[in-house]
Image (cartoon, rainbow, N blue to C red; front, side, top):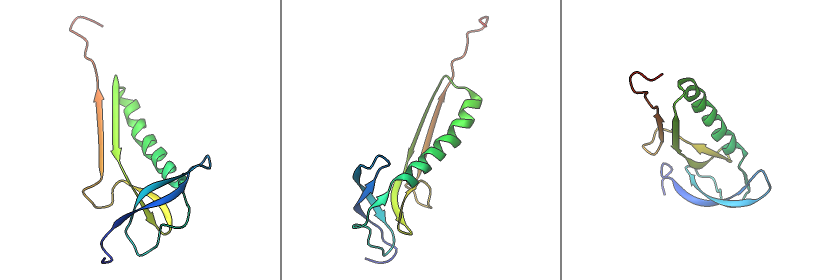
Length: 108
């Protein structure tokens, strides 16, 4: 495997409630990620931040319905579990659907 190739490995991750789950994580460096326990909190913080940044402008335009979908990959960077949305690859995505209802003419 060359340095630029990436591979996925199951990595044990401890959730804030203490539960341990295994996530399929992309390892892009030369670090062994399979044996030490990773914390999920950095990923949860990233998700919360993304949701807050998306929710604020959606609340301003006040659609009747809003759907937000985003894809992410989990990766190990500097020994820490992190969520990657945009990192110069074609895998990043963000889809936002907003719906409004228009009133027929003559109705308030």
